Length: 67
Image (tube, rainbow, N blue to C red; front, side, top):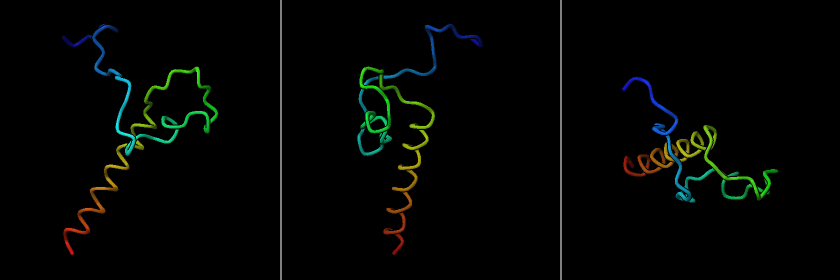
């Protein structure tokens, strides 16, 4: 179980996502110099952007709850 084959990857990708948390380059790749023909897959950077958006929203909503 310690070793995993390429077929049993821990990470998978399903096309789609919530636009509210998607990075701009996934929403409009042409504006970032990414050809339209290239597959749009999440990257570590786009995942960090999404996490940052979630943290930001939690902070904003927590501030409103504490007032």
